[in-house]
Image 1 (spheres, one colour):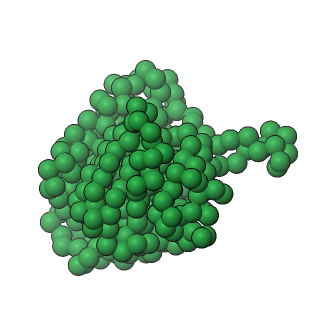
Image 2 (tube, helix red, strand yellow):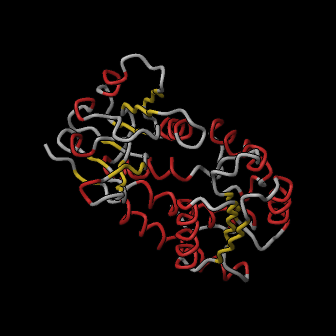
Length: 298
């Protein structure tokens, strides 16, 4: 068996196009296009690339992008002041503070300062509460992308057995809750789970989200299962030359592709979906804040 690759780039492009169409419609009602503000503190190279890509795709979708970049020594108080200013700015529809923040800044306090109506990353307590209670709200981007790709690959996931490996508030827990909303049967596994390989072999859908390169092996996967690899890890690649590196996921792709029915590549799988769902959330946030109806099925 050779797994079918789930093309996250192609699906993300579709979502970007729909966001652009909806944004253009909103502009007629609001007198302006939706706006996403991203705050970056410090000089983390990966974060810099990610923020730049967010800006490019936001503008490509016909929306306004604001980037606020501050040096690593910026105080927590100043970051909170920036967030407060964006909360008060009626021209800003979505706020995202790029993680990780420098060690001297309390990330939970900063996230908690974002107004829930502008929480396009779906990470505030209010957003998390709405998710747990099954109420409408802005959902976390990476988990939402995982669920959408699973549905694109497998169709209805009702009754499917899902094992999420990882229990972070960023990915693991919200991914489990979103699959539960879709009537799947969900297990959250973690570092203390007993006989993890045996548990994973029971799953129709596996979501590795632990940040450990190629941890999930081929013989862990039930034949025909769907593997949604959230991990993105840079490892040495001496075969490419001295000092070279390459990106791999949390799943051992070359092994798993022989067993799975579907698998997301790294890169090109979940990653592009995260920004696509962010653009979608920005449009939804703008519409909700101004009581404008979006097209059916958006």
